[in-house]
Length: 256
Image (tube, rainbow, N blue to C red; front, top):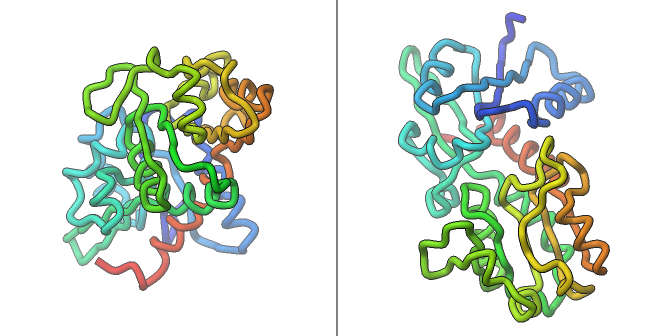
């Protein structure tokens, strides 16, 4: 297809991705013609500039695992949130002849914030973030900005605000009622896996949020729901961040 406009996704692997299907349906529903959304599955982030140069109709790209942080050195500019977070999931491509400039954004922030806020109770004052990757940084940014105290849970804790999974006990579950899984544990096809936390201590005061959307209910969420917790998967967040990305790509309000 010789398209006037191309958008796409970079990551590795991309078999799990929902983006291409989502944007195809979006374009069809809205009657947007001469537009395509392509997956660019690259085994190394060093290939990203070649992808952009060899696809001159490419106007914007999404960035997924494992490149949300690795992409930063290739960008010419970051918006304020992306710079503070240190992770990017959306890039707007500016072309002026042979000159290409790339600006990075983080629309995970918008998607997570808008889907989390309606779920929070007045006693949800502290949160555990499972995982420490690029998605976790967007989660931390949102949680701190709406006033929650945050503690990271990592397989290899290195920083002052990180703890090991083995340190999560009943007291931690009670004191940190919001638990966000930002790790890929439990994502398709590994649907029988879940973060190693003591689910027996979870109750109706807990909110479990999983950034994973495939499967729709991870084992992490199943176990939380069985204990009476409020649960939320990552699909609504993903849809909102995708819409925000498209707005960035197509609106003149987002300039270099």
